[in-house]
Amino acid sequence: MTGLRLGPLLRYVDWDGGGTATVWIEADRPCTAEVRCEDGAYGTTRTFQISGHHYALITVTGLTPGTATPYEVLLDDRRVWPPEDSPFPPSTIRTPDASSPGTELRVSFGSCRWASPPHGEPDPVGPDALDTLATRISADPDAVRPDVLLLLGDQVYADETSKKTQHWLAQRRDLSEPPGEEVADYQEYTHLYDESWGDPQVRWLLSTVPSSMIFDDHDLVDDWNTSAAWVADMRVKPWWQERVLSGLMSYWVYQHLGNLSPAELATDELYAAIRADPDGTDLLRRFASEADRDPACARWSYRRDFGRTRLLMVDSRAARVLEEQHRAMLDDGEALWVREQALDGRGSYDHLLVGTSLPWLLPPLIHDVESWDSALSRGERGARWARFGEWLRRAADLEHWAAFPDSFEKLAALISEAGSGPEAPATVCVLSGDVHHAYVAEPSWRAGDPDARVLQLTCSPVHNSIPASMRFGFRFGWSRLSRYLGKALARHGRVPDPSVNWRKTGGPWFGNQLMTLTMRGRSAELRLDHARARGETAELVTVHERTLTPGH
Image (cartoon, rainbow, N blue to C red; front, side, top):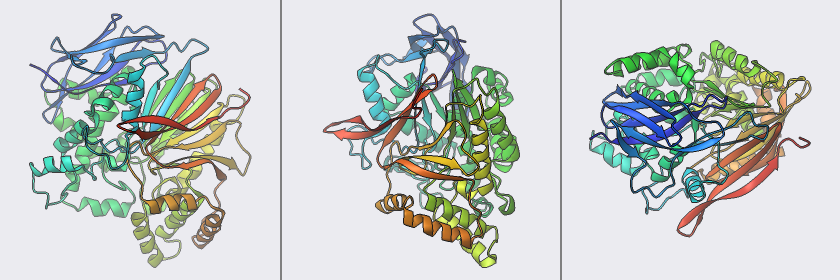
């Protein structure tokens, strides 16, 4: 009897009136997977196989715009979702009526989630924001909820496993041998996703709220693709090749496929080839190997249009150029694609969201340190300083946009161009995570500000922690004294002033949290919610709210 191993995850829901959605599942054997909705909408497909695991991404058609319809998942014509004893309300597919002038879009986002401990066990990092969001929605299914959940990186931690996972790993291999308590292969990655997405509350949440995702470093390893020297050092480790291939393969299966629309899936040659092959493992492994060796051959970035809001989710990890004299966050092809998507059909969208796991605007001191370190590492102050720069880069995780100064400036120029002129959107928001706290920063351009309101919105972690020393460092990084220190370092590295200045206009906030943007026409509002314990339960508490577009 075929069973549902993981999922369902509601991934893509269209906003153009086409009445389509995609639902991802993992079954425990080959089968025909179906989604049946109460209103007659339907989808079916055969599973495909990767490394002994069986998956399906089911395209559902016939959905009615402006409705919410419960759905079931069937495997070989037997219902497996929802479970008979489910304590949660039915999973639904909500399809917006984007043609209605009053249609709102709510986008919740965050990053950095350790899997929650089993029910009843103490949680050393406090309540999980996703668990808490699930509790809120399930208590009142008809209340306001996110239209999409953006997960901005570190959905799983390949290099920081739980005690429970370490015990499971020890049954497979000798943990005294590298990579020790980190995951080693595809099978171990599947266990991470089971642990993270098998959490009952998160499982139900992801079955009923559409999600879009992008990786960050811990999905592979801390500081993934920091520098050319880092990559060279990793490639001589005997366990690294299997880790990176397994990480990219599992990301393609568990996260990337669901980011794509049905139209994009229909033209994806790799997806078609894997579905046509009785076992797609070798095909996907070859793809992952090519993607690791030549990032330009794969595109992990993608675009979603939610009515009159455009999301550009940008790969700021795998698309890097790491040659020291030509460092770039995005290779030429990727940078051109991002530019084309940002400027395509200007005037057809009221809000532009740029999702990038790594913040574009950091506390000024940290920005200046990263820019200074980049200059040292490329030899601006000689070979001895270059060696120091490479050491510091790795020791202090100096690998955000500021560590790629040309890319920082190109993104600033693109944001200014996209946000200027009579067809400018009302807002351009850069959505990021990574740094285990939340803040709002707003830039101003030396050459004149764009017409759109531009904000850096950073929110993490969803469920993690941050040492007290780092809290102090992030707070100090915004101080006036730290700005003088940063400028002194920039002068030492002969680093030119950036084309933008910026200031913090909210935060920093620490804790497990989610940010939500609500867009209605050309208006936009921001809310930050913290997950806080209340006796035996937890709830989301709003700690900050603001209107981003006064006058609209």
